[in-house]
Image (cartoon, rainbow, N blue to C red):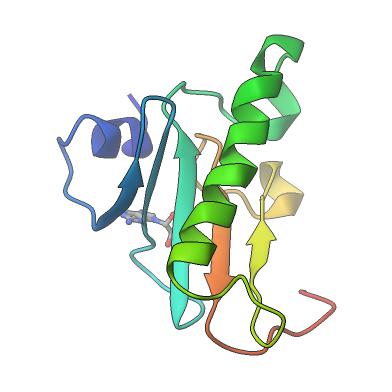
Length: 114
Ligand code: 5GP
């Protein structure tokens, strides 16, 4: 069982900000911005690189869930904004093998991301 499956199961505590039947969103334990939330599918897809065609609806749902959380927090506006990041595999910087979208906001983001 991955760390994030344990968070879904409430075996490990997390600061959950949104949940529905397909997704969970919770605060990152090591925030890289004033707001740093992880949006994950309840289905244990390891990473985008291993998603299947049958996961199309879940992948779309993750983005719309991130949009909803960003909107609820007041970041989905022309004067603010947010960044979504998905790290995939070793070179992508992935640490937890359960697909997650990082939602970062609350400050000006820089580019390139490094
Ligand atoms: P990755 O590097 O795989 O894209 O992102 C994994 C993220 O999970 C990191 O930003 C890390 O801070 C976060 N994380 C790791 N362990 C925990 C934990 O136990 N609880 C929470 N809320 N976040 C965690």
